[in-house]
Length: 167
Image (tube, rainbow, N blue to C red; front, side, top):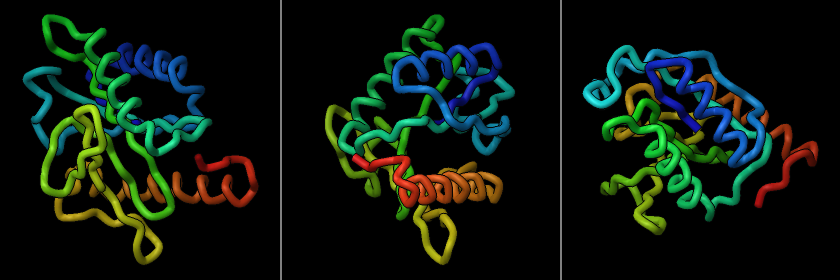
C-alpha cells in the first residue's frame, strides 16, 4: 500500500489501523516527498509525503476491491470537514506487474467490481519494473522502481522458500 499524508501522526495512525485490519506490516519505506503533482494539495495541504508499506500476509487478488473499499472507509473516518488527512492506495505486486486499485475508470483501467478498477502501473521487463505511458510520475522515479524491484525479489525468495503461498 501507499500512504500519503502531511503529518506523521496520521501516517502512524493509519498504518496501525491497516495492520489491525489486514495483518502486521513487514516493510515500511522511507518517507518520499509527494511533489510530482498538486492533485491533493487543496484537500490535504503541503508538503505531502508518501510511504510504501507491505504486509506479512499476501492477499488473494480477487479481494482487491474489498481492500480498496476498506481503505476508502478508513480515509473517510479520518476526514475533517470532508478533507482527508491521509490517502491510502492499496495494490498488489506479483512477478509480472504492479496493480493499484482505484475508483477512477480510464481506458487502461479494467473494471473489477463494486466501483473499483485495476490500474496496471508497472510491468516487469528486462530484469526490472518499467513504467508505462500512464504510470504516475512518482512511480516512475528510480528510487521507487528500485524499491518495487526489492519487493519483487523478496516475494520471489518467499515463494521459492515456501514461506508464502499465493492464493
